[in-house]
Length: 254
Ligand SMILES: [Zn+2]
Image 1 (cartoon, rainbow, N blue to C red):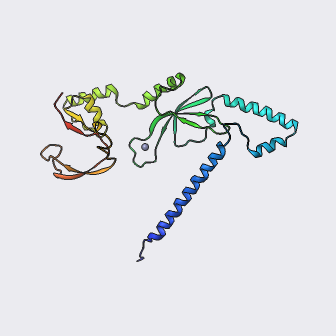
Image 2: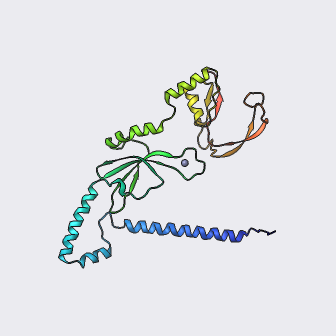
Image 3: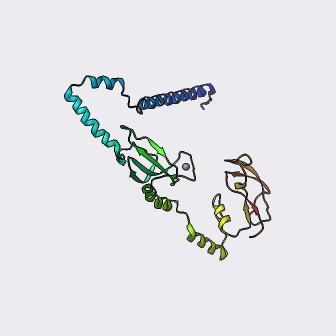
């Protein structure tokens, strides 16, 4: 039998090296970003480009002028969608141009394992051309400050995407309960029922500040009423795992 020994020094050395590599990659990418931005706003040319222009003959300079006019024109229009760099993590639901900007309605999956809210969004981004780059601006999911053309194009898609069960679905749930059905809601869905149905419960979480209640993932003690049908078969004192869900207090029936 081979004995495997964990070498804590070796492991921490490896993770130290990994951290250093990550830091170096970040530094280099920040430097490249800075080099790229330097002087762009005030129209400064790089030293090498300046020298190259100076070495041109009149025919070449005329060609440079012609090309520059053409490229200037391109900056007056919204970039074509196919020109964008590959934003693979985003799914674009719709895009629309306005002046020299292209607005995109995007949803984003995140990298969290077992994320129950994925994909996130839809969010609005706008892109414009800056040479061969397409800087983006994030507009969140609020429409109020967007051009009318963009709002009109995105609004129906957002409404459709948000979907949910709607009034019709809620009526069907009410009908199900009225016929004697048992309805169980988990997490945020409980709020929907507490708000829309005449239930004798009061939601407490939204009355607390982050200082008073913060539990993004916590093991809690549970005291279970084992005489209640919901608690039958459970231990009176047990544990549960809680992640930021709403919680309720029994209230007078309204
Ligand atoms: Zn997610």
